[in-house]
Length: 142
Image 1 (cartoon, rainbow, N blue to C red):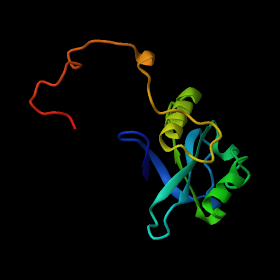
Image 2 (cartoon, rainbow, N blue to C red; image 1 turned 60 degrees about the vertical axis):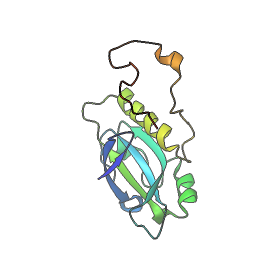
Image 3 (cartoon, helix red, strand yellow; image 1 turned 120 degrees about the vertical axis):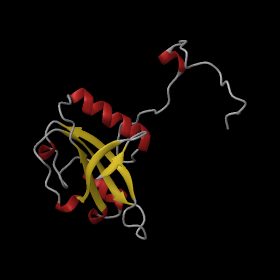
């Protein structure tokens, strides 16, 4: 298991070597990883994030439309790994939202679409609650 995402993250299955992986015939979110440091075998870089209604129809391991970019980025097909997330009861929109969040966080080099991870005040608007007051302690935030 590998955890990806903001805060606690999502518990993805894997990583597994992409070259020997048989994708399950189920919907899910997936991330393609490249080994980033030969000295640390458990250190990976997220290079692509996607989602599918049927993972087995995505063209894994190397018939996916972006697989040549993955191989180039990883320096060879044997440096590629995959992890995947089953989203029980999740809709296409839910899987897409998870994918966009992961793309915003990791900015994977092989994804064509990029998403900004920052929020602008006008997107949320202003609001007042009991928990939005200034600090009441002598401590100053760092």
